Image 1 (cartoon, helix red, strand yellow):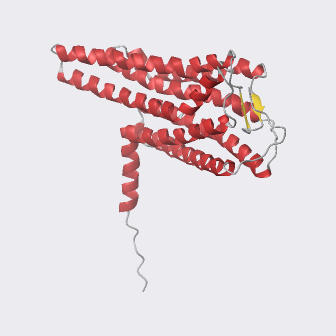
Image 2 (tube, one colour):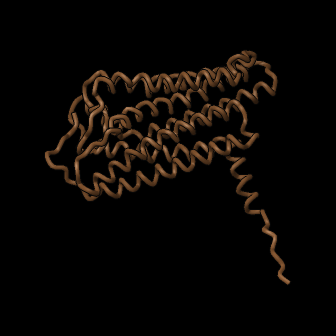
Image 3 (cartoon, helix red, strand yellow):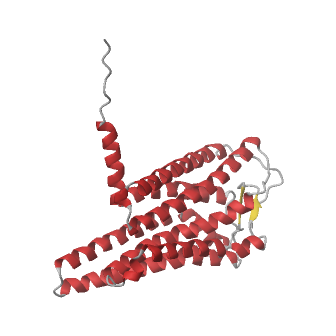
Length: 305
């Protein structure tokens, strides 16, 4: 359960980590808008893989806006040293669960597209833009609906010490459901896809296969490996959250556990946004070209008589 204090006292380290979280979130929002703008306006980025990357950027943007609301709310309460919850606190807590799920499923959709390209290149139905939009819409719908019962049952509560609205950690139905839907399903499916393609590439190496086919398979395998690495980075930096969930089944988590956990979530999201650009060649190339163009642009000087 949450650790409620009779009188809220702001610790000396609250404000610095609030500011760090706020700055990280602002940078995430900025990067998300830049990435989406490039993908929308650069015709070289108008492809199915980039559509899926755009979906990931959109999820990150909406999640960052939700986290920004939490960060501002927490900072205000800490500065005033008050215990107060606004009307949107519970909604922000609910959306955090929803958007974390949609975020992980966006990586799964990228891996699934690579899987289809390698193993079923003739199945054109799964490679169309319309099908990808349906899958994207389905992932958003599932993410928004699965935690809805927890919101309606009043399980998303305000924590005075953490200045955030979350489902209390401990023995309950909600926490295992969130673990399964947000993490276990997408991660296990991505690992299965990766292993399947690895096995397929190994089989291709053993038999006579066209060079182009083998090169394409290895390329898609490399992209899936990068996607899994992104998710691994996210999971590694968010390890404190997972640790607190595990501890809550046996004992009371440390005080201010949600503050610590969500700081790691904010920072990890920033790291993932930077790595996402580095791993996405069309996006990286487009950004690099635009920067080079601005550097090389010569402003004509005005000759005064």
